[in-house]
Image 1 (cartoon, rainbow, N blue to C red):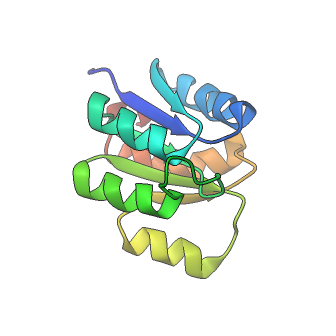
Image 2: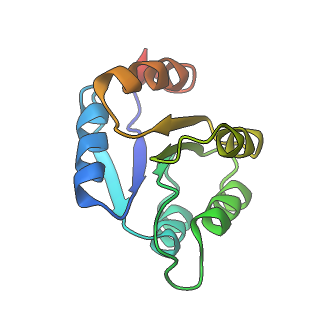
Length: 130
C-alpha cells in the first residue's frame, strides 16, 4: 500500500487535529498542514498531495481567498481529491463545490459518524479506506 500524502487546511489547529485523528485510524501518517489558503496552495503545488481537506471559512491571506485557492488547486492538481470540511451547511454551496470537483462536502463538527460516509467515498479512491 502506497503512502497517502494528505494536506489539512483549516485555520483552527484543533479542527486539523480532529481530522488528522480520524484519518490516522485508517493508517494515514503523511500529513502537511496549512492555516490559510495561500499557504495551502503553495504546499500542494510543492508536495503534490493526493488528498486535501479544505475549510471554507478562513481569512484571506496573501491575497488568495479559499474559493480562489480551491479553483487553483483543481487547475494545478486536477487528480487531487479535495474534501470540503466546513461549518457552512448550505445546500447551494455544497452543490457548487461538488459541481466544481470536490469529492465530498462535510459539515462540521467532524465526528466519526460524519466521517463514515466520507470514508466510503474515499474508499473508492484510496485503499486505506476500504
